[in-house]
Length: 168
Image 1: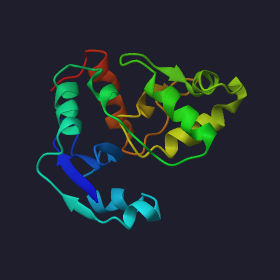
Image 2: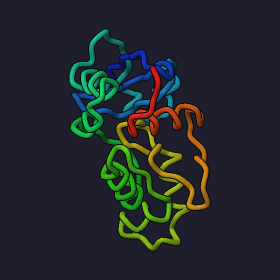
Image 3: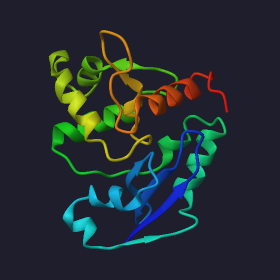
C-alpha cells in the first residue's frame, strides 16, 4: 500500500508518498492523486491511502523547514530508472544544501562526460521525489534558474532557504 501525507510549507503543500517507509514520490503539490499517477503500474496496483502522520519522512520535512538542511538526506528513497538515471539521482542526493552545480557537473559526478548535461537535465525533469532528491540545486551553466516542475518561484525559495536568505 502507498501511504500519502500532505504537509504545509511556506511555498505551498508538499505531498509525500511512501511504501514501507521508503519515499516513492514527493512534490510541491496538494494533488496526491496526480503524484500517485506518476508511479509505475506495479506501485499503483498496491493502492493509495492517506494519513495524518507519515512518520520519519514528515519529521524530516519539518526539521528541514526548521533549519536542519540535511534532514532530508536520511530519508530512504526509491524511484524507477535506468542504471544511468539512478546514478544521476544518487549524484543529486550528494549535492549539499546551500550549494548549486550545473547540469554538466552533475553528469560528471555521476560518471558521465560533462557533455551529458542533457541526460542530467532529463534525470532532473523525471525526478519523482523532490526535494529529497534535490534537483532544485542544479542550475544551467549559462545562468538563471532553469526550469522546475513545481515552478521557478518554488526553486528560488528552496535555494534561498538553504542559503539562509528565505523570508517566512
